Amino acid sequence: MTEQITLRQETQDDFKDVFEVNHTAFGQDNEAKLVGALRNNSAVFVPELSIVAIENNKIIGHILFTKIKIKDRNGNLHESLGLAPMAVRPEFQKKGIGGQLIRKGFEAAKDLGFKSIIVLGHEHYYPKFGFEPADKWNIKAPFDVPSNVFMAIELVKDGLKHIGNGYLPKRI
Ligand SMILES: CC(C)(COP(=O)(O)OP(=O)(O)OC[C@H]1O[C@@H](n2cnc3c(N)ncnc32)[C@H](O)[C@@H]1OP(=O)(O)O)[C@@H](O)C(=O)NCCC(=O)NCCS
Image (tube, rainbow, N blue to C red; front, side, top):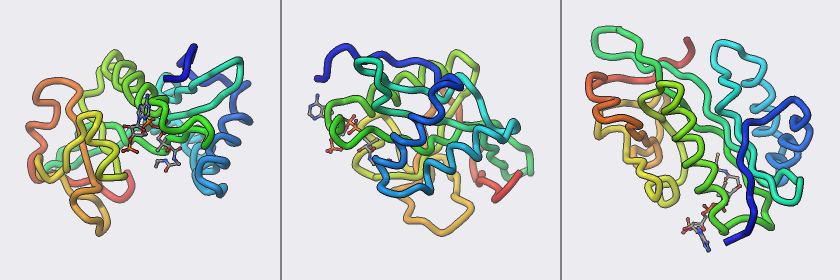
């Protein structure tokens, strides 16, 4: 376990480093640019849910959760969160930092009253933190993806219960 990792909300001074962490982890700019675009979208951005991991005053990881809507079978919209992207500098990976970021995000999201999180990601990684295929709740992705990589978690009991047969609209 890496020692003395601090997790805290991202500030404006971190933007450059967060770009760099995403760029380095993904080996391309797409996700780093996505973070910038989501940050500038006040309809979805929640400042408390852009979280950085710091070691020795250096940002080594970042995770972002933004607001999404799930539409139920009656057309009602339910607020949820999308986890994306998350990144840890390659030399700090596989030390549990990603896990710490996820758990910190769960806590912060719960404190803000969010009831669930959706993620499109690795089917062996996210289940370690409690994510399950979203089709358990009959929630569908707005695009074609294998059902095991489109996952969800309830932050509170029955947080997704009444959304059966829901799906994520492409754009709200
Ligand atoms: C995905 C990513 C954020 C995970 O970050 P991480 O800090 O490596 O994550 P963790 O350390 O919590 O878990 C990674 C693995 O290390 C293992 N691990 C956790 N704690 C560990 C420890 N103390 N010692 C050794 N291994 C550990 C985990 O079980 C996990 O195992 P797995 O490889 O079988 O899945 C990171 O790999 C990354 O930035 N990847 C590139 C970008 C990306 O793909 N992002 C996700 C899509 S948005």
